[in-house]
Length: 206
Image (tube, rainbow, N blue to C red; front, side, top):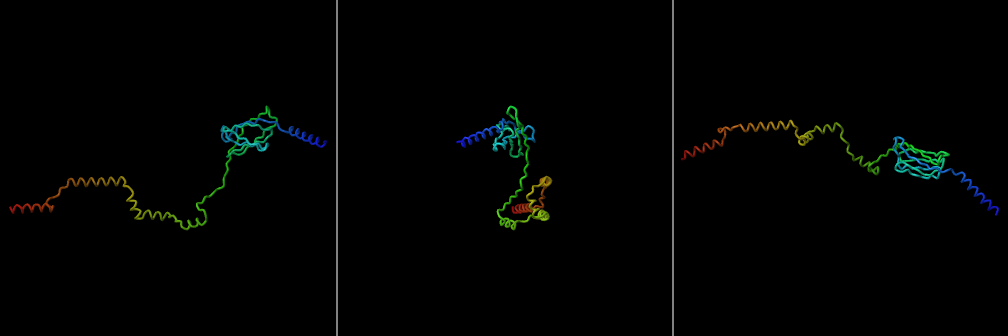
């Protein structure tokens, strides 16, 4: 019986001692801002209470948060693309309310370089490498551009410029004017001589 009473007394003492050691509660409130941009809030930041079993809270779309914590609790603010920030609630907070403006900075993370190859195996790469066509150098490209076949193809495909069109039109107009004012001499026309001989023969027969 005495042993049972002693155990109950010990449990009661431990419970009272733990209650005495529990830190006062505080209403922790604030807004998370971007330290690199004045007045710009950071939404949906994760707030982890490292002193209370890693309890997690999340800010709203305006970066605002408000929850209950204990004095001297250590709270870590984390967000994708930002460096983590830790805030410690001070002791003996007045009116049991603590308000802060948390400033977090953007964090640049350099990822390792990744090379993507279109070949699944080394055998496919070896096959494509052996069958690959070597590109022409500058000398070979110039030789192909000034070859007769290339020049003829460009001549047939390229449209005429303004000077060529003007020359062709002037030549056509000149030939048209010459043809309009030229008269054929009938003495030099064999058909006319044939008609003349026939008419004379017809008269003699009559």
